[in-house]
Length: 281
Image (cartoon, rainbow, N blue to C red; front, top):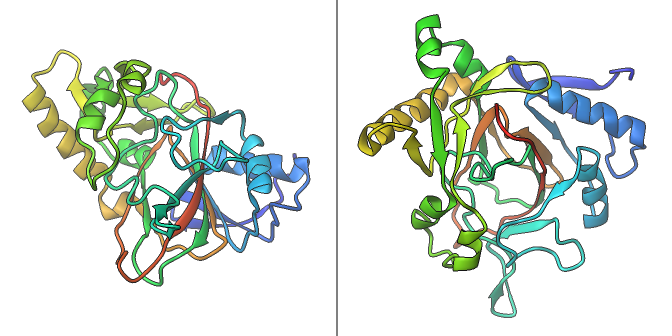
C-alpha cells in the first residue's frame, strides 16, 4: 500500500480530510488506502462526493460487512443497508428519521459487537445548524493522570437498548417488544482498546444503566462527569456540513452527537450506513 493520499487534519491530532479522491470512481486499491487512513486517524472526511446509493454501499463494503438497522422504518427499499435521516415530508409522510442521534453517544453500543464505524453522506444541508460533533476518546484518555487512568481502567458499563428506548425524545415511534427482546443488555469496558494499534479510548456513552457493581445514582453522576470531560472543546471536532460530504468516524474511539437546526425553515437529508464491528476489550 502506497499511503500516498493527500490529507489535512480535521483537528490537531485527530481525523483527516482526504483530498482529490472520487469515491464513486475509485478502484479497490484506492478504497483500501482510504480505509487504512480511517483506521489510523479516528475519522475521515471526503468532500464533493456524488454518491448514488449503489456507490455508497460499495464504499461502505470496503470497510467490511455492513450492519443492518435495528428499526427499518426509513431504510431505502432497494438498498436496505442505507438509513435515511431527514425532516422532509413526501405525500404527507416523513421520508426519514428526524432529530436522530441528538445527545452524546456511540452507535449500537447496546450490541455485543457494536458497529465499527458510522458513515454519513450529505444530500441536503441547511445553511445553518445541523453540525455533527465528534469527541476524541483517545486524546481524552491520554490527557488523564496515570492515577485516574488506573481508577477507570477496570470499570465496566451496562449498555441497554431497553433503557435507551425509555429515554427516547422528539416523539419517535415506540419500540416493539420483539425489538427489545432481540437486544438484551450487554457489558462493555469503559476504557476500550483499539484493535488496530492498541491505543486506548475513554468509551463512555449516554443511555447506559450504569457501572457494574455501582449504585445507579452514583453511576449516572460519574457518567455525566466523564461525558462532560471527554466532550470539552479541546477534544471535539465540529463538522459543518456541505452537500456531497462523506464523513466516516470510528465508533471504537469516539463519541458523537448531532445538533439541531430550524426545521420549520430548512430541510436536512442524510444517508447513513454502519459497518459491523467486534466485541470491545
